[in-house]
Every structure is written in structure tokens, then in C-alpha cells.
Amino acid sequence: MEKYSRNEQIIDGELDDNQVMMHLDKGKYFGLDPVAKRIWELIEEPKNITEITSALLEEFEVSAEQCKQEVKIFLDKAIQFDIIKSELA
Image 1: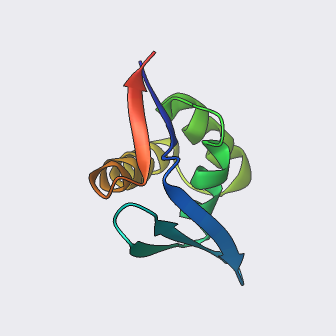
Image 2: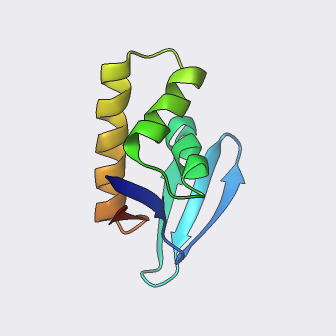
């Protein structure tokens, strides 16, 4: 199963309730909404999608199906922008 973790080339900080980030190699800035920020916090240590989804389901009122679908969309997009990494565990 894939595990997701932060790209070490990202520096980040908090601004209001949002996470702001900069990719050091690419010089690009990114902003995360509160849910994406929580995913970022969760993957400080590598986690699989089930672990991420389970944690979010405890904190947010959302169906399991919708949560997993939206987490997958975020993870895929974050991988595309090289914000996070995925590896087979």
C-alpha cells in the first residue's frame, strides 16, 4: 500500500487558518485550506490513505466515501505539484 509523506523541498508556515508553502527547487508558492492543512500535518510521518481518511473522519463531519474520494484527489494533485511523495510500503 502506498504511503504519503511531505516533500523535504517544501518550507511551510501558518497564516490565519491556512498553510502557506514554498517549493524550494521550483520557487512556487502554494496555499492549503484547513482540511488540506490537516492532511499536511498528518503526513509529517508517512501514512497510507486509510490512516489519513480515518483521522479526518474523526475530526470532520463527512461520509467515508466522500472523505476518501476528496483525500485521493488532494493527494494526486499534491503529487503532481511535487508537494508530497508517495512510496510503496
